[in-house]
Image 1 (cartoon, rainbow, N blue to C red):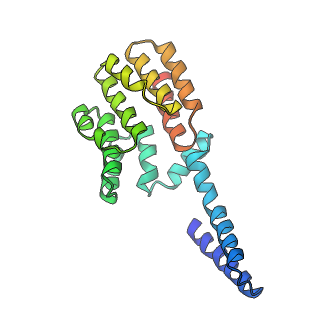
Image 2: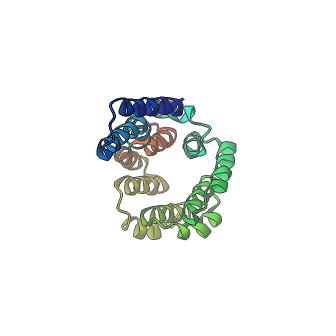
Image 3: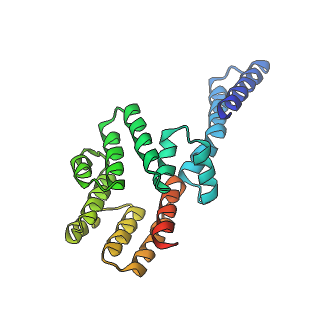
Length: 206
């Protein structure tokens, strides 16, 4: 439906410009920019900025045909078969080695296949994500000292707080784990917030 609306709006925009004989390239460019912004803003806002969990979940379910969005819903709600199927679809769609590595590592960590995760995390180009998943692997192996060294190098606040929450959980310090989990959530928006919220709701009841 969004694309139908986009087509209609673009047609109206074109006819309006033609009616008033607007041929200034800058005016046409500005009109197109406003049009694209108006159509894309709701989607981008939900993906990156929304904080309302119910709205995000509604968006994810509405777009469950898109594996890029449905993988978030499947992971957040521990839907094992959907995680497998959706990851497979994403791997078939993507050509980037780095992006594929992220999908493989996420799936491997989800199913606790640490050997698989360890064999792919180094292929992730983004340093923050590479360090994040490396630390997660070490925490799953209960290599706390090794994880601490990596956590010190992690810059994004939500990543560091999430890792600290996981570390405290491994050390059976649940009150502090909850505290770090809350801080991690505070530093997230959009789809990442939804994923953390659902995970921490299940693990810590927050």
